Length: 163
Image 1 (cartoon, rainbow, N blue to C red):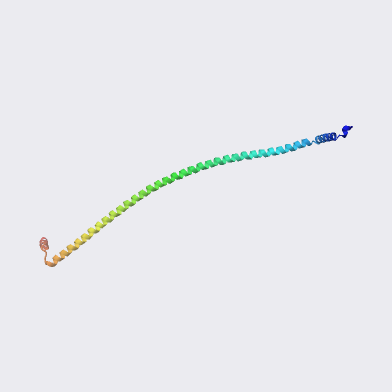
Image 2 (cartoon, rainbow, N blue to C red):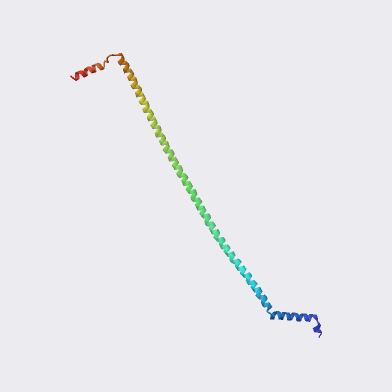
């Protein structure tokens, strides 16, 4: 009976009873179920995080694709705008040259017209001056002579022709 008086024996018996009692109350199963539930929650969170990561990677790939397409479109638009600007510059240069040529021709025609008008005015002034000079000479001749040697025989001839 010395064995029953030993404290270590009672500790062992208490421990054995505790273990049997825990097994009988299914505490290890509940602990395992709680651990399994927690593991399942953690696994669900990991699955959700994996799904979110995959979705983020897909979105990133889509954004990269859209960015590349946008950059390509921007480059095409820029190239088109540069080509259009060059074409407009060439067209403007051609139109400007044509306009300068037309205005030069118009100026030459106006100058030629002004020269011809000036020449006509000079001729008219010269003719007017000549007519005045002739009038002055004739007026002076008529004033000096009472009869003109050219006019008198002509008047006589006219008189004989009508008889």
